[in-house]
Amino acid sequence: MTSSRPQVIVHAPDGRGLREVGVAGETVGRAWSPRDLRRVLRRAGVPAAGCPARGARHPARP
Image (cartoon, rainbow, N blue to C red; front, side, top):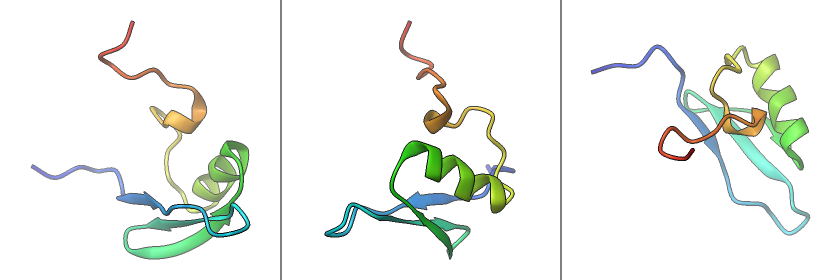
């Protein structure tokens, strides 16, 4: 089963709190906050629908 969504990896924060963001195996930017993460993903062309950084709820939670 394949997904049409690209694989997104957000690495653990470095000493300054900056997180490296990768899409499909390629580094696309760095983010400090959820807002920065949304901006990096938007610029990389990743669709925002269902993105936890956008406030979507987990399907198992009410």
